Length: 326
Image (cartoon, rainbow, N blue to C red; front, side, top):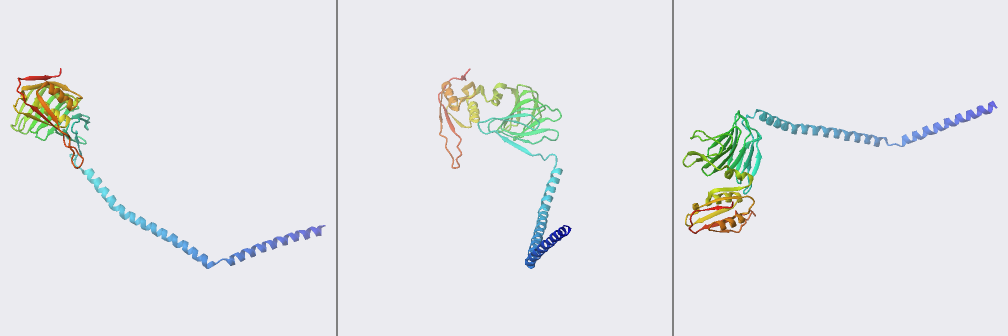
């Protein structure tokens, strides 16, 4: 029994040895079947690819550094220039009210401005120094925030300036005529040749550039300031003044043919709000001896429209008459 068991154990042991030998022989044959030279070439190829990628990355880094250097230098120069920019070199904005429209805007100091049709306001992005100054061409209504240490100044192309600390007022420029109207507070109007004139609420200062004279007088605030609320108000205004304001409001050319020069014999007391220009002239035609004709609006080659023209004829001699709708 013991002999049989030993033979069995020795038989299994030899079987395991034979299996191991066969496995080693198989691996030797597999290794002998490999093309070592081809494998070596493949390894070299892989190494060359890696070297190329590393070289390419290094080249990209050098190019990026070359490109980044001038960019960083430019940024540094601009940053340095911006840091050293003088305090008075402010950036300016310019707002223009399109013909036939009214524009409302808020200034950097939170003062409010209304611009009448065709008017332009130029102002800095930040008020610096000892005053707040803007430049006006046309007509503007101002509600200025109070600041005693930094007066608010409206400069005009005619060289006239209007200053205020905190108040509500209107400034208009037309040709050589500059008008300033005070609604509330206190303002002063002056030129290089005329000393400052202070206004009281309800007063109007007029500067005539042709004569160089500066005068002050009373004015109807409702009539002169209603435009900012979209109204056109006339109080004893001559027809020439009526047509001038209608032309501005509706962006049309109104040509008055006054053969007998009697337009000043007619004054208007009327208020217009949302009426069309045709409706207004229909009313005027009933109230005054006028005839009118609106020309057809033509178009330029660039598709823009020619400003519409209205011809008005005042031909009949009449005694002085007032036009009124209330």
